[in-house]
Amino acid sequence: MFLADCHNHTCCSQDSDADLGQVLEQAARMGLSMVCTTDHLDLISRDGVLWDDWDWSPLLAQHRYWQEHGPKDVELCLGGEVNVPHQFEDRVRNLLGQVSLDMVMGSAHNMSERYDRQDFILWNYVDEATCHKALDDYFDELLAISQLDFIDILAHIPYTLRYMNARDGNHITLERYYDRLEVILKNLIRRGAGMEVNTNRGKVLEEYRPILQMYRRLGGEIVTLGSDSHVPEDIGKGIEGAALLLKELGFDYYTVYRRRKPEFIPL
Ligand SMILES: [Zn+2]
Ligand SMILES: [Zn+2]
Image (tube, rainbow, N blue to C red):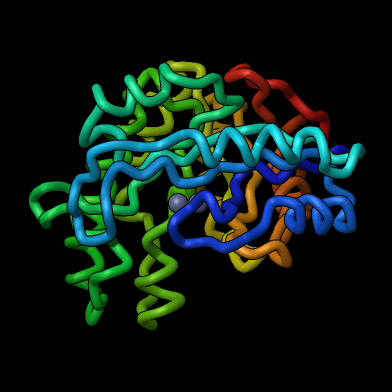
């Protein structure tokens, strides 16, 4: 089966030291047919400070080099993950106009201005009330991102649960946000955009089941698969399982992007 990991990070992301050559070697060993890198195109720091500029040159140089020198049986595509693009829409639009990418993901790692644009990772989720306060803000942000015409894929919808549950020991589910999620997914569908199953290095899958069920019920068809790896060993983790989950839920294909166009891979 053609397996593609379309969410992963290299040393061009602030939070990764991964060498793309090693990532691609590991991808070949894992039997992946495609790697689409999605380094953070961040315009904001973890504590909410806005950065002036973004320099494409290291990312483009890395991509060109490994397209030529990487393993021949692993296709290398160039994507990017833009954090809270709705908070500085014009700047992101301008940034994305400077290069041609294969795929653009929108994510929400930082809170809104209401909470000083702090990264969700920085809060201590001491109780359920704190979790819901953060989630209320988070879903407002996802709603705003889902309306942006330059975002192909909405990244890791259950993202904040990584910190609320896995790290801080809560047992939060997203049910109370399903009405809002439905609006978000409808926006994506109407725009011809999609969502991803982000396995968080092979650790997460079941959290996506109800989201995918809702998405499919609403007519959603575009789903990319990604490990969110930040080290070479994690590339491809959980991708095959994610593809099998899609198949089990009645999807006929998953999606990859080339030159910002969705292409469908039969399951
Ligand atoms: Zn992310
Ligand atoms: Zn990521």
